Image (tube, rainbow, N blue to C red; front, top):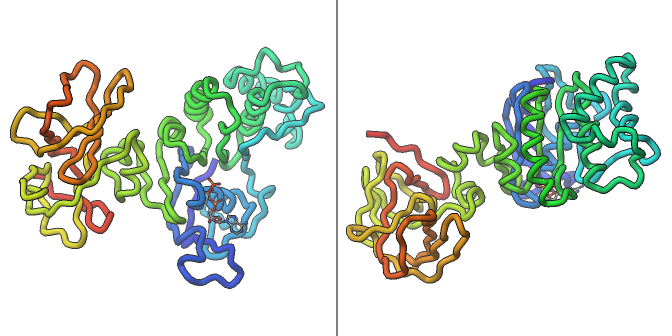
Length: 358
Ligand code: ATP
């Protein structure tokens, strides 16, 4: 496994593209640690596959370099990079048995029979294929075939990285839940550098230690699932992560208070006159109904999710969502909310501002 360095990396598909809008991937400078579990997360068209394919060698970047453990591999084709890839759709040999499919990458590299047997048995057990090892791949369900693809991706011990591009797309929803968790423990046990592309935040947050949140060809934030949830660097991250996403309200900031519609809202930190378009961001989980001293809201409707209710309300004319956990008293006559000060983030021109804690 390798540390992966992206040095001034950018990519345009346009042959003579030099304008920023021509770039599917805007300039990146990152070091991805050896053995890390990374998820590339973002909406369709944000550049996830382009970045993955540059790392794998399927695309030669128009600008910058890719290094594996300090060695420049930018000009090397995929087959020379010693990486394993798992795609959206199963890539298996139908005429071979499950065992033969799993053994194939190891045989190809000349491993001894006993080593192959041991490794295949281990991977098959980890991924839940041990009962069908001697069945032919032909005739198996798509789920089982995709499990074989995952197994083939994991079977080689010496790969620099395992790259997975939306690997659970074809998996049945129930099994998806199971495999998501399994992939996480596979990473823990096998210790490979793994990069997982997805537009599904649940998959990204379950699998990754580090989530790389992308939007319009840019990496907006790289951090733990918790940091993306609690302190999103950009309003887009706050909005994309969480279900529902973060609330944003226009506010002026005066030191340790925000002012919304003339009413002061205490903040958990001190801000030195941020300028530009200022907003506060607060997650629905950190908004509470209160009997007095809060901001006035009008409740529009309530979504009952069983374990919690999502209350859709309006604060002046701005929509605001409140998450009310099961067991918390709430009725639609409640008309004021308060925010947990330490959980409020401040943004100017969509970017988070770091406050000074008291
Ligand atoms: P999705 O989740 O839909 O696969 P993505 O985040 O992986 O999206 P990319 O496939 O990397 O995004 O695409 C990023 C941008 O590059 C998009 O605007 C896309 O239209 C463009 N693009 C991708 N492949 C090519 C190509 N071969 N030629 C020209 N433009 C391309």
